[in-house]
Image 1 (tube, one colour):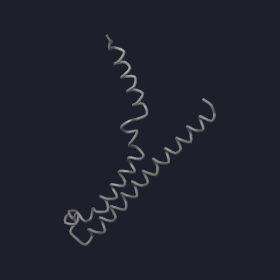
Image 2 (cartoon, one colour; image 1 turned 90 degrees about the horizontal axis):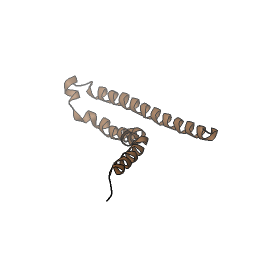
Image 3 (cartoon, one colour; image 1 turned 120 degrees about the vertical axis):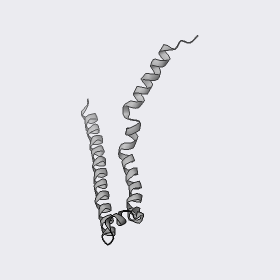
Length: 103
């Protein structure tokens, strides 16, 4: 492996790690803020009654949609169609065609 290729792969790995770290920070902030919002909104009511009020989950729901898309941008494409998926599928189709006879 040439030094430039190694450096390029290192830079790609660095970017990937930064994206993953940013997602985990986003998840942590989401969790803390939404727990705080729910705690503040339920402090004046009975705990069970306050937890059943769907208005307390408005922020968590819509922010959760944004969090899902952040997760998808970090993990999604490789989660379903990883880098090796395409290569495996090509080999599988080649093996299938190899066993077929054309007359």
